[in-house]
Length: 440
Image (cartoon, rainbow, N blue to C red):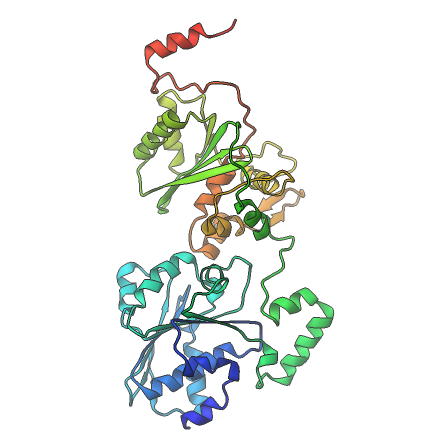
């Protein structure tokens, strides 16, 4: 079959795939829009016209069956494109030499990703699943002059990483198009009937499934994006509240240790350490105590965090540091299944209060805070989905969010000057001065 016959079956909205050059071509929308078919057909046509290396990418690809490999094979068979040769793990054009390769991004290390440097077109399927970490590795790797990145996705949430990074405010090299079933002249009548039924019976589902709108924030989401974005707006310039620090410590192969600094309604900043041992983390924490005199430091005592706590406690900082176990009993045990649910809910209440609150604007923080779904146990207590499930969806551990919620581990009151003596930094003269100031 010739190329013009195939082109005639591609909806007009997808014409830029073949006729225009953009660094990024970003297509999103609901069911029935024909995105996957249009992308596959357009790439097969381009591969017949010149030699190309085309990478078909997803966030996770455990096997070739998880990729668009089967879709491309089906389109080759449908159009009887005998110039394409289907191999076990790739597809080749026997005339032009075009190659289609298939990879998952999450488990690729830097050396493996470098194999994509010669790619002409990268097709990211199910772009809503791509993490910021994967994008930050991939984007500079697709570096060949004239190379393009094609993205097809059905939006899931307001804070889908690629939507925030690329489509919410596209630059001059990015084409963004929404395509729905009513833009596709080849949409089957059966799908149109299903869409109309959904529109009448479940308007919110219709907006998401058929018109490509992100999910309405419902009962499953603990923290909604609008709550976080409202806190990103600068509105507080000073505060007398005591300094509280949450410390989420890297463990089990994760590589980020995060300190969160909060004074009352103002979360001031985050500091991050990469791949540090427990002694180095304890030393850094001791320096923060000396420099900032926090009223309290709540640290995650799970995994290696217990070792950091022991070191700091042995140096005389028991009055300042508190070990927190996310899986331990909640303070209000009748309302929360564990401390993790209690702290996260305290953070959600903080974000949703009438008085203004402030966070440092940070898209990673937004994604992490909005990543956790809630449910309830048999006793009706708040329970959060597992951290492992959150990590699978994000592609990383929500370290910043966990450091932030640790600052809500328990109430902290301003009781005066922080004690840093014992085996800390205060010299013996300061200790006597401290005694002299005591009131009996």
